[in-house]
Image: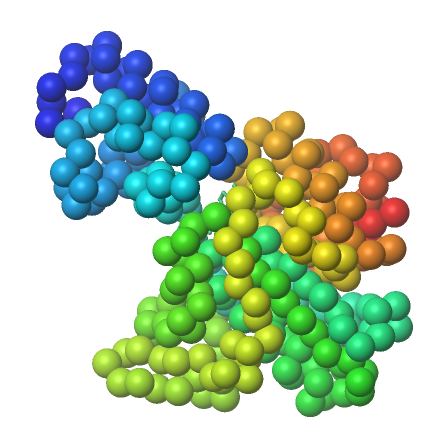
Length: 282
Ligand SMILES: C[S@@+](CC[C@H](N)C(=O)[O-])C[C@H]1O[C@@H](n2cnc3c(N)ncnc32)[C@H](O)[C@@H]1O
């Protein structure tokens, strides 16, 4: 049962269908027929905080209102922000062992990376740490720098990412004790603050992947990981076609470990990174 129980079973089903449509239209996320419980648990707090009686009332408030804070809060509640540091490791190792040097030859001073769907910041900050370490080890050529743009649709996730404060539990997911010690300051009570050297390399921006990518400029590398799984095949293909247009010649695209390119063999070629793969723009 959703909300205050004032809707019949049939009406609740209709409301759920309307909500599914709203979510797909506003951010591309596809909900299955049977995800009532998910919607219910994700929106429970919002219903309580905003005193919304049921799903129909919520939809009425947010439909056709592109900039409503309630719409933003609904999207924030419905996105899955699960993330970790150095996720799958090999994309980050391949950057340091191979791609920084290769892209420095093409781009010279600035190697530009886009972390699309960056969630709470673990992905772009892992990239920033890689660049910092590569600079010290000589794997990032002298005179080259790495600039990272990180985007997400969720304002609350971005606010957390920009702050750069993390709890021990989140830090334990993929970050080595050495990196923790070197890059964070212990604030006490299990909270740690990322240092400004790593933070300063990341420019966070709100961006719905449905929107235009013009403001991203030309990029050497795109990380678009663990987000395409929520979208339809058409939307995936549309995103990757437009990302291809943002890449510099022979630029690279990293997808999540369980994700694959839907066709698009005219646009990307597969490069084995042992383990894993990366896609190079044709
Ligand atoms: C599971 S997290 C992935 C985080 C990170 N890329 C990783 O691999 O660890 C998915 C992220 O995609 C974002 N997202 C979902 N739909 C989006 C959309 N239409 N535009 C931009 N970001 C979106 C969510 O807010 C969430 O932070």
